[in-house]
Amino acid sequence: MIQVIIDQKEERIVSFEMSGHANFDEYGSDIVCAGASAVSFGAVNAIMELTKTEPVIEQADSGFLKVVFPELENEETDAQVQLLVRAMIVSLKTIEQSYQDYMTISFLT
Image (tube, rainbow, N blue to C red; front, side, top):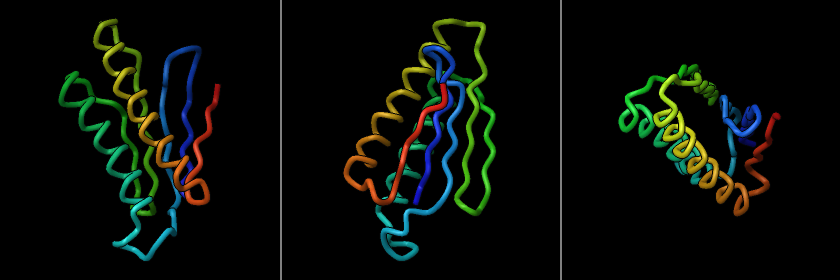
């Protein structure tokens, strides 16, 4: 199962962590894993390209990804980063709703 943990302090998303494997289908054919990966990596790439910020990224071949979003001095840019992260969460929730046996999302507050 893919586990997504969103760390939120007050209204701000501080980080997210994704780990595990969906095991919906065999490697290379697992649409749940592919969807979750595409959404998360797409969001991180969009943040880096569109806001010119560099989140702290930790990843491993085992299916582990952690991304930390340091608070930015420029409030407008920080708000843009937060909007993109929230859009990612909406997309991940959509996957979770359709494939609840293969993915869970939890929030730390």
